[in-house]
Length: 170
Image (spheres, rainbow, N blue to C red):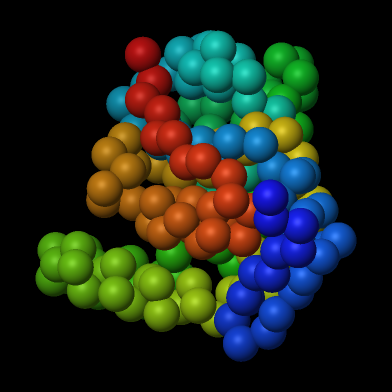
């Protein structure tokens, strides 16, 4: 039986009670994209997977797609009992996205985004302490393999030991 656990967080170590608290707060980490779906189907998918918090990881929480801009989305989520949070710093920075659009090179994109994300440990730690229950990380892309949210989910999972599941909207 492991009585004392220590988690290393970017050259800084936390142990004991804080590590346990971080791990206990967050349930499963889900990811979801809204590309090609409706707000109704999107909400149904969140509800059927018992999501407590939607964490919007777009740098700018705006969309041309009806219902997916920050204020509209927050209102829709409130109606179905899901909390909305936006974390701009966990979005892919515009220069990184621009280079991807120009090169179409996802390997370089993820290398660059992961380097950026490695400087966001304070934000990631804060999120793990503020969010409890099942959380869904949301961005636009339908395919998680082409979206930065998979990297954010991986890093949150390292901090919390939570499982990661990628959702597809029906």
